[in-house]
Every structure is written in C-alpha cells, then in structure tokens.
Length: 470
Ligand code: ZN
Image 1: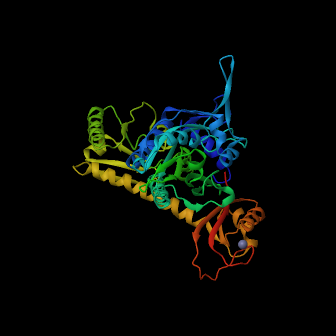
Image 2 (image 1 turned 135 degrees about the vertical axis):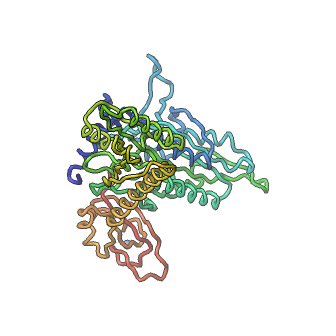
Image 3 (image 1 turned 90 degrees about the vertical axis):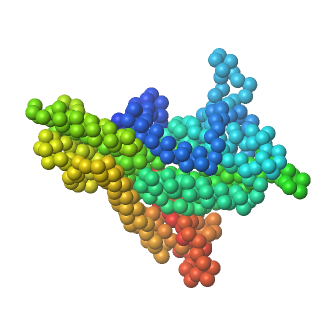
C-alpha cells in the first residue's frame, strides 16, 4: 500500500463513491452522494465549533483587481495562482475580477467600513465557500485541487496584540478538536519567515503524514498583526479617543482533512472511516432463510429504530446479493460496524458484531443495554484509530543531531527534526541540503540549552523539521 499509495488512494475514492475526478476541468472533481455525506458530517463538526466562537457570514466570490492588488506582499504570494474573470457576456469588463484565492482582500475593505470604535471590537467571523487556485503542479483529487470546495475561513479583528495572540491559541485549539475527532494526527509548527502566509506576521501550520511518508498541510492559523489594517485602513477609536489600527488574525481549514482521514485510516480492503464522519456508522445485515425471515427482519428493524433514536447513523442492508459480496461492499465503504442477525442468533437472543477497524468479531446480547454497548464499540473504534494513527505518526518523527543524517531520514519517510539557530539563511541552507520543505519550528528551546544548530553550530533556539511535502 505504501509503495502504490497514489494508486490505492485514487482507487479508494472512486470505488467508495467519494469523488468522480473525470470532470472536464483539471483539478476539479465531483463530490458523489456518499462522499458528500462524509463531507457534510465533517463540516457539521467544523461549523459547530466555529459557531461557538464566530458569526457566520458570506462574502462574494469575486474580488476587484484593485483590492486584490492593494496588499503587495499578499498579492505577490498569489499572483501565479489567480483565476481572472475578464468578460461579462461579450463585453470586456472595465476591471478584472479575481475568483477568490482566499478572502482577506474581499473581507477587509468591509471591515474598514464596519469598525469605528473599540466597542465594535472584537469582530470574529467565518465563511464557508469555494476558493480557487490555478495550481501549476500536478493536481490530485482532494489533495491538490484548483477549486477548494468549502474552504472554512475565519477572520478576526481586535483592539490589542494580546487579544489577537489569544485568538491564535483559540484557533489552534479549535483545529486540534477537529483533527482529533477524525483521529488525524498532526505536528504544529511555526512556518519559517520565508514560507509564512503572504502578509502575515507569522503562520502556525498543522501537518500530517500520509502513508507514503509525504506530509500534507491540513490547517493554518495566521497572526496578521497590523499589515492588512494599514493596507485597508481599518482603524478604531480607542478608549482614550485616539485612532489605532486593529490587530487581525485569520485561519482556514478545508475538506483536505477528509483526504487525510481516508489516507491515514484506510487499509488493503479499502476505506476505513472514523465514526464521526461515517455516513452510516452501523449497518445491520439480516441473514435470511425462508423460515423465520419475518421475525429476523422485525428484530433488525427494532434494533435500527432504537439506534437511530439515540442518534446513531444506521441502516439495514437487505440487498438480495450473496453475503460475501455484501460484506465486501460494506467494508469497501468503510462502515465502522457491521451487525449480523440470523434466525439462530435470534433464538439465542444475540447479535454478531464485526468491527471494520480491526476485523474483530464478537457477540452482544439483545437487551436494554444493546444501544449503549454498540455506542461503546463505536467509541472504541474511534479510540483505536486514534491510537494507531498517533503511534505511527510519532514513529515517523525522527530527531537527528547531525546534518548528514537528514537526507537519509527523509528518505525513510520521516518528518525529520533537528536543532536550529532560527536564522533564515541557515534554515534555507538546511532546506536546500535536504532537498525538501522546511516545515518550521515545532518547539522552542530553553535559553540555557547546550544544543547547537545542525548547520552552523551556533546555539540552537528551536527544534525544527523538514519533510517531503505534497
Ligand atoms: Zn544555524
């Protein structure tokens, strides 16, 4: 699976009916009904968390060229990736309009109209919508796409740098909860100066590791400082009657996280879904014979009703196909738990349950505790996926003390950590030597540390890492 990861991944998203990549525009795919339900469950988790902290809004998809170009650093970071709308019908437009690659330049001119006084602050909003990037690298369904469908981006404005800093922590905590609920492990790093979000003071990023040893960025949180406030003239009158620029943060997450969950938990048999996003968490398979079929079906329905009453997503699979074929397709869809019930089981007042995550088969008695026992099993499945994924992830983190060992460690598929002085030029050198991406620093060292930078030998300030990236 590791060797043919790419093939395995493509296969899984097609056979499990998640995405049809054959849409006639490169880098844009169609979410199929089953995939869309996974997506829906994912976004429910995301928006429930977002709603607690922000107000949802919706900004236009098109951004005037003039606004996009206002923040020099920002536009430079995106200039090769922007799709432009230049015509309205037959007529050339007076001004080019960009399909948003991200929404800072759509949102902040409005912030400048809305914010007058310190009582208007903080503002914390988010929106969910497509963003577009004209990717020139090889596109891959769900991983590198040209339309990021449902990018959830948050934008906040504050009256003090401390408050903005606090918001960064809040953003990070929210993202941790999202990844945890999908059992997707992550490393949080401060991206290096040369790779931060264009226009940001600094960027915190979450990276996870795919089975092929490449890392994927799955979420970023940016402290924008006052850069955009100055560009878009977003000021407020403070308590002393003076005008100040606001302090801003923004952070974004997309359905890429679903790709990670699929890649990380899947196995040879195909998709393995964490219960939190599985469209069907429990499937009940009646084992039917001519005799007693009705009683078996009645019991299956009874169990189904009891489970759905308790918010378990459950269905009965009574398709008239051979059990082997049926089990195969259930496994393929990644359904966490399969229940089998035949006349003999019914007589013994029990059901057979089979876990998708580890294939374990066991029996449960049909009694008042049945629903809670099944829910316990679903929790166990989540915990097992979580533990397995983190164990593997932690094993792929390797600290090397000698620069010579970096290359080899990356080849082995590791996120390779080392001591770093924090100097930009030095960091770029390390990135060059290893031929891979410099993820950033994940830990700050004490001032009295005796560790030294792997490249220059000066006192180290951070533990940083490089890895192969998507
Ligand atoms: Zn150094």
